[in-house]
Length: 179
Image 1 (cartoon, rainbow, N blue to C red):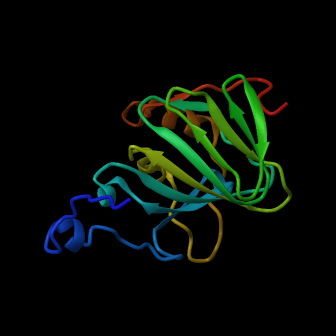
Image 2 (cartoon, one colour):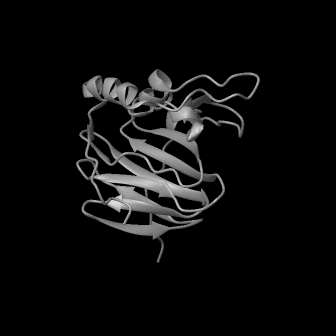
């Protein structure tokens, strides 16, 4: 069977426009959160993708788990590059390891915790972009000496939560989240 389909002219922008981009391994804005419990690079912001998506490479300290929360406007996805994590998903949880992909639609309570005794790595995708701005706004710049900033106090966390409306993040901590 000879299927004929229309093909754009070779001078059509679909052939010629170089709209893609590359971000190198060590590129991106490096930030430190919560006294170094989370560190990472904001690899791609919404400014680069027309607001369609963003990407972070996160390094999570042994035993660290973030506060359960939901996003009001964005879906979040994770790819585990190294380590073992427990994920909160609504009222339940599941474990995931290297090579696993996790998708969390907007409006779903979620969090993650590194289950290992080594720093573990996650790639974190947001669609549309926007939550990456949290890391840029609240993350500490790394100290050239390598010293970590102090861990976040309950007061600092409360002040950040109070400012979250622009990011549409809803904190939803629970007593037995990691059981």
